Length: 216
Image (cartoon, rainbow, N blue to C red; front, side):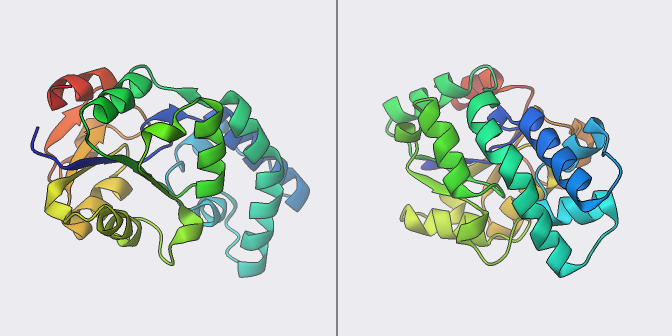
């Protein structure tokens, strides 16, 4: 393969933490006096910055309330994610194959890096990653390319040398704006047709297909 590094989104790309995310939303909404959100509605927001997902589902755009929600959400969701997050089939094999081939792998996510690192450490995967860039490490969240560009620069590479893999059009737009290659991974709630406006090197039905396409 021609890529010098492969970067990944996390939620619904490499793993499914939706059980914990739904629980966190329901706890936060209950504390703040909102009706309980539907699980499918919460899942459809995964990939958005947490505060934006809160506003989308609640209609509450007050900055202080948005900040308050994160605290309530994290109280339940963060420890639960460490325990219940499920890797998608092929995720560990893909990361280990990249490591064996000497190709750096990294994560760029709207989830906090400290949470990601705890989830990955629990599953003995953190050692397979060269970098983990989370929401607290950037000023602007995806689809702004700041996180991608920061990670790519940290690897000593240019965007055209890198493949970014993600499950949403937010990921696709971030890659496009960064100037990186993009692979859509259909593990989430976004269908193949939604990626039509964005250039993609490949659309992977799952991570095993992605690994095969990369020749690993």
